[in-house]
Length: 224
Image (tube, rainbow, N blue to C red; front, side, top):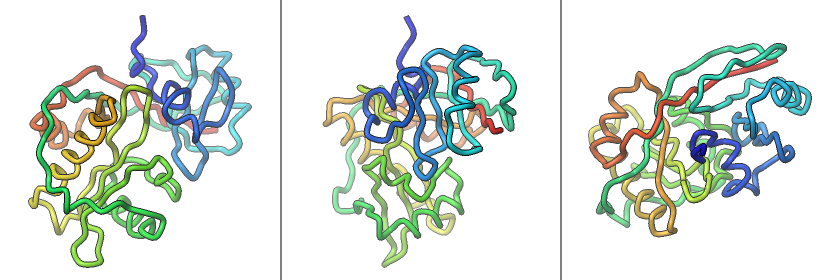
């Protein structure tokens, strides 16, 4: 039987991210302003054709699968990025509850600036709608942040973990990760995350926090 996380986007949009879901029973996607991810219940050529016809803009889009997938024409594959998927298997970690600040719409310009600088993955004007974004400030300046993205219940993805280059080495990423691990487990869910397979530094940090590799995963960037 397939694991929920083998097809994380579709299963997230069918469960924990239903409020952000567009599409139908076979094909689901986020709005352009929220995230580029698309999900298909079964990765058949017919469903990829239906996806091509259904989506309201030209992309780019990101299809995520634990299985190697041949993306059929008329889709154009712009990138095939190997990644890894990790699940939290450690203990609850301590964190300073006074540090993380809940981020709101007023912080979006700084969030976009920080993610553009650090490139933790797709982050758009309304990515904040996933919820649970928190940050650390130096005065009025946002210098680190992390949030939750896909929520294929009971799994919750920690995402957009980033620190301004001038503020690395202060343990901010660990602090924010610990906050989210505590929050997700308190909600009765299981933390997980994705990383590029070549991002050894991030993977080593996640391992040190208690995340274990569950599966290789493939990120297909596709467009018309």
